[in-house]
Length: 277
Length: 328
Image 1 (cartoon, rainbow over the protein chains, first blue to last red):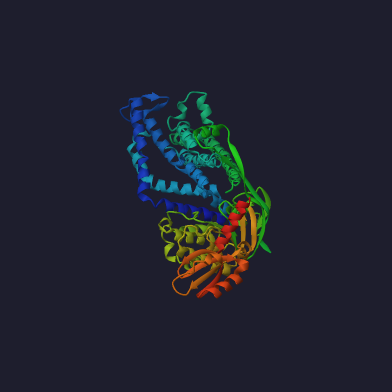
Image 2 (cartoon, rainbow over the protein chains, first blue to last red):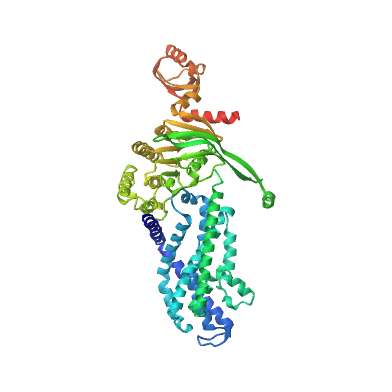
């Protein structure tokens, strides 16, 4: 019990200190947060051109989505990506491995992944605090594109799926970062991942637009939890039974990715420790 | 009982060898050649509780590799080591809470935050009770004269101030073993002396076991009585620091001040003139011939002042390193 309390105190302290660190560069942070809303404007115009739409009530349907559905989907994907994207995580881990900063996690009684996780939670909390009102404003502007407020189970499932998006996003990107124990430089890996995840997460297009058997294959990967699943749940595209199955599969992916992270960290540290100098 | 026991410890690692030129770079994509570097070659030593030992050697001698082995950062190729009864590379938290490694200028502090935020995080990581934590923090900040600075962002501190903060962060959990790798590297004389004075006082008070590497012989002379000298991965000397000069220096220095403003021109017959600012001269003479040469000088010249000194420690060590390297 005492040990658990102590462990929780460490996590809380990392979280608190990371929040304080995040608040140091206020202007840069606020600017970066607000600039992230710009792509949604271009996406709305892009889909408007694709649908040749004139307004929210445009009734042209492509693959089951009206123009309004696409705008709603894009907005919810933006929210999902705010949870699942981890700017700088992979490259930060690689940098720490290259320049030796990772040593402190070998010397001090602290776990690298635990530290990175709570550090990232802190970054996200500060981001949401700053971005909350801009998000509310954008959703209010686009309120006509949403048909109805989801029922309470769907809404709760949506919130869980957003947390899942965060954890899956963190575990995928930390796993890539840990690859630096072998490759040292992972910027190409990050570039490939960003391109693939843009497509495979449903950020570029809803995954149910894809033809079979590609759609089924892609839906078996964990990337859909980064954007497509949370957006689909909040749009009411899953009934309650499907929602539970999706969330359960997501948790299974979390377990798999967590195990892979642990293996990579353990073997990576062993490999790292094999060098001298 | 020995706190640090090292037996036949060796560390070899492979380094990529690349020839110059872009054709070699392309060839390296398909086939790479590696050299095996024997950084530490089966070294053995013991350090007792409360000892402060200098670990000396030229660059690439194996000092830092040995410290990395003892702190559990790297695995050995062969041999054994225990620190406080633990095998370091097993990385038990129980061990990690009882030692500290300070690598000169390696930052364990949060760059953008005041140092006190890092100290509070250390308190939680090392599970230090608030009262002893505050007592130690007050003591350390007073001793290192940085109490007023702990609320200032680390990035705004000078190098010397940052180094002192690093020391505080490393000592807050009262480690029983402190591994110091170049703690005064890059510091000005004032900061060096502050760090030296602090380490001497704190080690004596806490009876910590300290293994110190430094290229500054002033650090070593100020802090350590025993020295282990390592070169090319092998231990060349393990014993009192004072013995190094006796053992490895075959000369002594005579400092002379002649009457009047001139110095004799034939002093080379007595020894090697290493410095002269009339009327003062420094002569280096063979150790065994010192009494005879001194008597001859005093007999022949009008000398106002005379002093005999050992050769500086760094000269003796430099000679030792160069001798051993050229012997290979």
